[in-house]
Image (tube, rainbow, N blue to C red):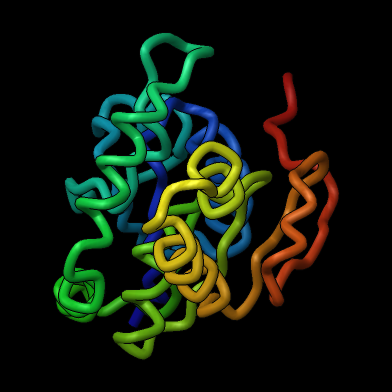
Length: 193
């Protein structure tokens, strides 16, 4: 049976796909039989622009990053409200996503970098490796730390990321000092031909 990799990709912009696609393509070059399933809200057409070979898709958004009013401006109020909603009944959400992951039967999850997927994968007993130059816990804390719900939400985010076997940090990346499983690596990119 072919190994099955579930690739969870944040749909907040296209940088996450741009970062994870070279890794997935390199894996597939080494293991052509690798079965890929992308768990993301990105379209199949968008994925096909970066990912070589066939793949399946679970259409969902396990994260949203931050709510923005433009490419550079964060809507802090909308973001804080969205995080409050995401973390309402957090354990139930982890279990629900874990059931979806278990039904897909992957051998490994590569997450760039939806933390709900990390928590759910670990809950489902599927090994998780996170890969990203940033994490939503640090970004959330930067914008929302003074809010009364922030310590609880931030702790759940960190616990979710720490559930991954490793959090690979391609250079350059945020420091991620609050995570216990970081592993700095070199840059990730697609070579021009």
